[in-house]
Length: 480
Image (cartoon, rainbow, N blue to C red; front, top):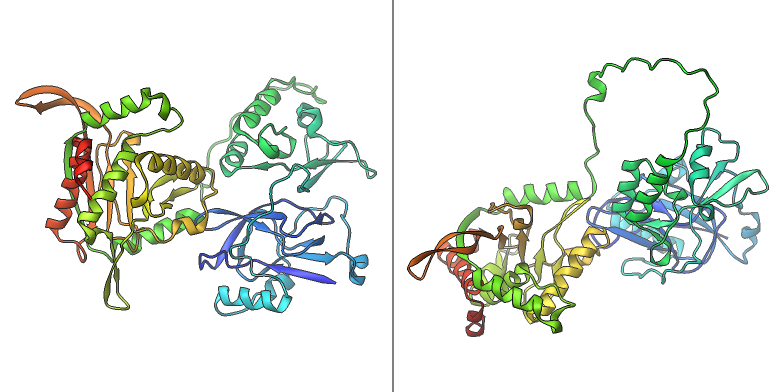
């Protein structure tokens, strides 16, 4: 029996996703819930678990394809069924093909999410929203690529010989090398593309067979140091450099993924909520001294407590005193929705663009817990593994522009939120202190807020509360 799996709605209400890579190939045996592919939505890279146990009969899309929700992406021959015997096995030189006409025709009209759900019901497959991937295993089947042993157009023999011996499999019965495509993160794939490295030839040293940046860089150096193969033609004078034409003086990149989602959100925010930004420069010397003492405390060695964590704690305290900044304007209902909790968004710059995952119930966390949550959140975001659910439901956002050496800016509200605070760079500069001029650690805070929800007086009071905690951390003991 053949079973088709359609791209599900990944819980974001998005109409499409880009296929990053297959982790299986046609002819592979897969288990239920085994991760079969990675897809990139407008917010994150998501692993797709298999809804069936059986043999991969056909891949209906290739890496890089943008697939609509509800489209067939893979077909399985269920083991033990009569039709399984007739299902195609792994073909020689099999590569995922572009979506076939019949696959495109199977996309239902109307709402993509509804089409996906209906398709899943008709096929008898489970709804994968909320599914978890199976535990990673070194024995998990990986996508395989075939390379001609004769050094044909599909590969450079010299490059193959430069690869680690355990990254290149022996010749198969068809006289072709069978290579595995190990797992890697989006930043590592981007680096490999920049250096012209084929990840299928790189030996993985990371946990669970994951290729690291160091693996890619080491392989690139190894190939560069390898002697060039002898030329079959006489050496001639180098040809004159080609004149650059207008066609190769520009690069066009499709607008999709995180970049499109960020652009849409910012335009919607800028032209929906009336923004007001107010600034306050504050002496944070006491906070920097406190952080230095934390760094010297052996009990806190495993925690990186920085000024962003202190600012996050100050924001939570200040929001309890100015709840207008922790609310939402519901246009359809004609209501102002006040939140009695803080889901604190932390803006993170990644290779894929800006994402703003949030820390749930941040008001309940201690300073150390906030620091740990921010660190984990940032690492997850930079690896492209932030779950879509972690980027929904934020109530207030915090962005640290100071890490880029910027003193201040006018941040744009995350849609649906009433405020966002930007923390500028901390600089040592002359400052009035106790009636004298002294060198102090100084930073600038910039608060943007929705003027429909927050008046100027309320925004100023909130900003002063945050500044008071950063100026004198002990004041946090007086706030609730």
